[in-house]
Image (cartoon, rainbow, N blue to C red):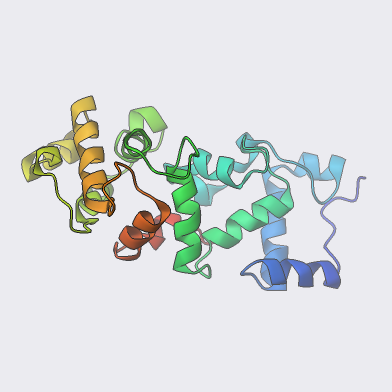
Length: 229
């Protein structure tokens, strides 16, 4: 105890390097940033304390991400956003620009699957949409251009099945962007549209394969799940 922010030895760094997309030097840099989030806990508990979700949310690189709390919950072993260094390192590795697209799709699916049933259902999608376009609920403020990109992206996830009754017109989408507000009915229509266009087997929900197919074709998807330290 009380060993502060002492570095890991070479064998430990080599193991971290094997398990992540980082070099040894980058692992040490991530550890430094981890320690800076709660220096008093590092002093009390050594190089690998468990930090509270509130500590990790102070990381500036996560501040603008509307899913920041959900991201922490997914990567936390306890599901409450609390993390030790290994969990923090895993999160930062998968959020890094070095992580391949399929890795980002894997954890994005987990983030969107709020009820954790292995499918993204309409209720999950309604929460996703609300997080993205309603700052008053999430505490995250997106610019008009960012909101517009989010909604346009939702429209473009097309796999071939369409149900026009769920569609929003361009004028309705522009109203959402301009007013920074979305109604319950608009949320349901957007969620229904995404389901209809991504659900390849017509079972009423988006499976991992449906999601992977749609996200792999979506321009800018990786940028939503990338952090540079």
